[in-house]
Length: 483
Image (cartoon, rainbow, N blue to C red):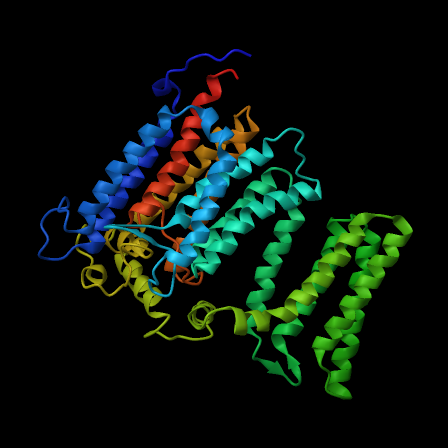
């Protein structure tokens, strides 16, 4: 097909540009409010963070304009080159980056510091889009799933080696892209189950009822419930589901009676026995029906049991002490209001004191008196809550959801797999950042240091989000071109 010239100014989705502009300048004003000192007078003062952020904003718009002038074939053709260059930079960063607050993730280039992990997001998104767009690519084949997973896991590994766990977690947002492109929903369910098992195992791991470790016993029962549910809804074999449910119920009741009237029972062992019975039962069904879904349930159960026994080891030996404390504070196992829980507690006070309409611009007491550390970066949402109240925070969240919804709409209308996958990657990254940042500020999630897009202070973050978005806008603008 022939290509034809398209007027970029007419083809670009201006709704996205308007929302981007509103969010960026709302972020700039919030940074001024968060970093404001009573002696400061100008939002444009380059000696303050608001003035520096304005410079980053100007350069971000310039980057956006340059990206809109680039031929779209460049992104698709050179995506692998960009990816491997970025992998090299991430690897070098581990060695040459200075130690800043225990992390080696910042490259210091004279007066400018850059965090390569931030830019790795759009490069990884381009590489995934390139892979999915290759000839005869079928995501349901295991080798193709392995390739896609490797593209995401490699930067995750390198970023973890930089001791920057928060930035590494963002890359798990690509699981939403995998799901859109054909990954089984069981994988997402398995991931949610892993989180649930981890939380229960940690929270109740040190609690005992008799000789039974409560956390492990609860996890085993949940695994059995998952087996029963998967027999009902995954294999759609109602009979096998009821039989497995009946076996579980009868054995649990028998051992409860034994525990009460005869001898003390360790229900962790009862749970393990139930899982073994369930695996054997699913295997018998598999031999009779050759339905591979029963085999999948067996694998899920075995892996879940093994994972449940690794929780304590992972928590005690893999996580850093400060990460352990943050999780314990988030789960209500510790208060530590003067230590790991201080930031979140002060953020809650700031947001709560804002009420419905807020205290007014520059009138926040918590933020002006600097009670909340990192209040112009990771915890900037508390500044919005205190000064603009529930109305202001709702406006910000709604704007983000409208932006994400618009990106998904644009992604779905694409004729190119490359553009669609990249668009979903953009939406997934924004959604993950919004969810985790707001969640940690209000105390629903552990503090892991993820910025709020367009609001948190910093050039690396703003530029990476801007590049991520404007590449998609450029690719979307090319939808009218014939390749």
